[in-house]
Image 1 (cartoon, helix red, strand yellow):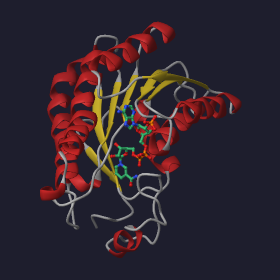
Image 2 (cartoon, protein in one colour):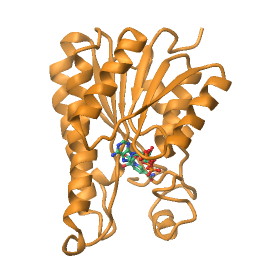
Image 3 (cartoon, protein in one colour):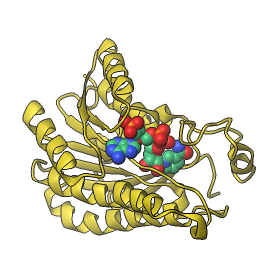
Image 4 (cartoon, helix red, strand yellow):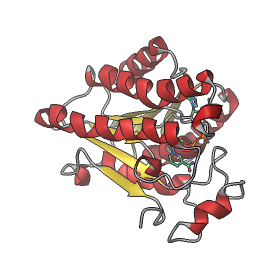
Length: 246
Ligand code: NDP
């Protein structure tokens, strides 16, 4: 049997990039997966179709992480459809990279709302449906621990908040056997951070490896954390960063 057979999952922001890699892997490993998207409806359909073609179950839900009602509805729909929720992955996120004096209020609000506030709300809602042994996995960023370039301060702040939230929740949820962890990717090849983009040379220059990571590599680690072998890991921020912090 597949490692996540019988489990149900919700992934936020699964229409592209890292989130799509997580959806694909959780579904391939046997979980029934629902995932949200905000704008990329066609891409979301394609992600779901690919998972189904590979023998899995994946179901897209339109839910904008800026609106708490959308998040609440996405959690409720997932739990209704699948009869519960075992695994929550908070992946939806945005970054605006500029010196603090140049950041627009809309950009600041988007980072705080999507990266931090929506994560809190999704966890709060999911816990109403999660049985003992559940899994909460946040996608933070290695920038929480290292920000070697200017222009990343507020983005790093939001990911530092996710790291602190993870630590605090570990104590609240351990009595229920629910683990909560924070995966901190280094540079991953996505539309938000293309391997051939303007920052690539600088990023590779401070890393141990000579390449960006892939969404599939993050998906594989998330699937491990979601599985039974990871029951002793909680409250941790875990780097998958190609040696960005080495
Ligand atoms: P992308 O921009 O490639 O994809 C972002 C995903 O989030 C899309 O599926 C998008 O859906 C969704 N999303 C964005 N805004 C919203 C919203 N308001 N409501 C719901 N969904 C939303 O980003 P990445 O895949 O690169 O990043 C994913 C996560 O990984 C983020 O949390 C990011 O901070 C983190 N990360 C990424 C790194 C990298 O190098 N790529 C490094 C470290 C961390 P849609 O298109 O439908 O709006």
